Image 1 (spheres, rainbow, N blue to C red):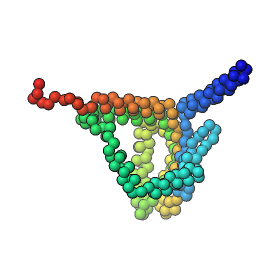
Image 2: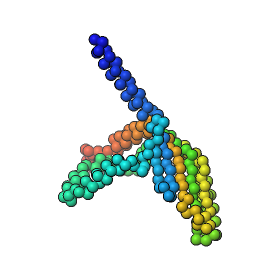
Image 3: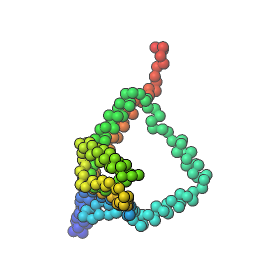
Image 4: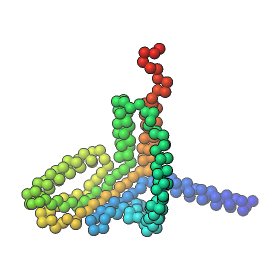
Length: 228
């Protein structure tokens, strides 16, 4: 009897740990770091607890797995590819029975606005920094392009900060008259995403899809005009 109680206790602890891990994955925001420099290329990392793991470039074992899969795909016979393509073409179009109309377009636009609003609430862009050298064919062209780009950016940043959760840390534009800073392109951003809010946005999108498709389905037994 004591042994059974110990086993049940261990099972309970394991289940509790798994539940806590699941809640942590769902509830805790995920942090991503996106960085780019011309010499090093793009770099993407994500936090797991106190640790950062690299997502891109891909780890060596993941890259090898993808390379082996690509080689298998290349080894497929042409006939197999044609068969697979024909089978995909035979699949029914899920929107085949939808009645496209002006009202349908309005519903889609309204749903898209609601989805994007929820996604933007779920994602925050922090400490956005970049260095962009601007070089024209001559000094005058460089100065004109620099003025246009900086004015456009600061106008756009006001709009972005109004509609998105975004903060800028050090946006830098360089008027590169001598073309000496062409390799100094740099970008950095921290992205925080809430899994709960993203799941809510996905659920909202799924419900909107069902509502729109149900409201705009073609009538199967429509009565022709002139008949009673």
